[in-house]
Length: 124
Length: 111
Image (cartoon, rainbow over all chains, first blue to last red; front, side, top):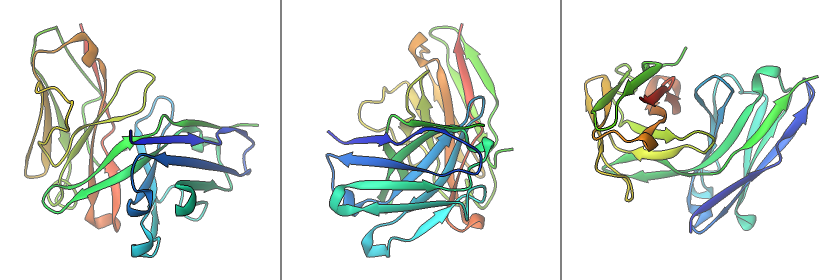
């Protein structure tokens, strides 16, 4: 079974840091780009960023709202992706999901599956 | 404000057909395929439609997607109570250097 499990969420003060993990199983993790998406209460899904595979130099790209503060990394030996969040703001409070990038040349790109999410609360 | 525009809410009675629109621009929907995600209350998002109109295995045939120009639509026929959820469209935006954009989401209520 293809599965993604996030962990590491919690309560952090504004200006603080937190590192989320996304453990993958049931598929060849090293061959898949991985993304992070968040959902703040009362708002819609917001794409956070992605990391590509080793073959694509582990290239990363981020949403403008988190660029320079968040860093996505991966450890293929552990089948795990990470989201390092620094200089956290109250508006970063959300449930954070990791998801696998799927691609077919004639069908385009999509996300499947998604993890269950981990809650990050930024508050003093 | 989201780059892709969806109505914030939609509703229908059991058995009805409901459509949810998603409006974008030439740099996103006009150029790239559209995917739809369903988020049931308290659960993670789930892939509902990919590549504009393709259903993953396990998704009922009641769900269908379409795209024309810079807009896309999700149609749900034979509405059921378990379809009550939030629905999001998504597409890559070529003007944003490979970044993905979501619609603001549509909350579907089954009356």
